[in-house]
Length: 277
Image 1: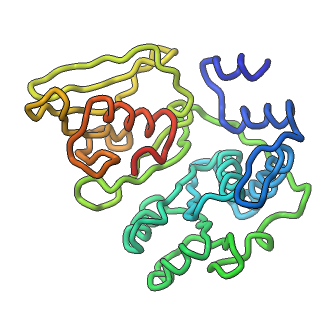
Image 2: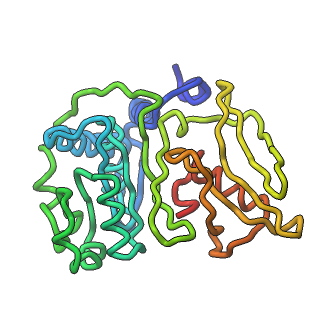
């Protein structure tokens, strides 16, 4: 099966898709960050070392592993590795307050926290409240040095079957209360292909759902009419709570267009987890 056939099937995994690319083009550049770049084969080997280390530490499907750091090649490899062992990725925003980050870590019960220097300094006054095993992505960050923590070169993890209903990641939003709320996405939710959208009207509210290729219905968001066809209040659907959470748009405003709402919901549930935080 080639990649085109794979991505159009009913279900697949990000890790398997990545491995197919490794096999197809091992020497092509997979990621570039600042003055560092790695090929697909090198990135795959790095992810294997990290995945092996996570399994050595007892990480299993159902566990959550947090990353709170700026973008880097190591960040990409860690993300892939967490999925490779069947665990759930908990990417935390470095811009959150220390108190909010502690709340997120406690809520997801992260087994590990990978962080860089800036985040370590940000968390200094609450460091004693962190129970997750800390791995330092930079030499002066708090935790066990990344290179020391990692399994040796050539290490490979034990393959783990992926349950489509298992959790892929948890994304935290601030909502309207300022208290972080975790939204869990399953592997199946991360492999959807929309065939149509449905809009249900109830009073001043409009509920938007998506139908996927397997006929599954995925709730996206709720809009509230506030007197203008171009201005709506927005509430994202929280699968983890089976409710709608009133929130703001990525612009920081409490109202926006229908298109902005749909872009935000699809970005959160179907594509880009950074589209809405």
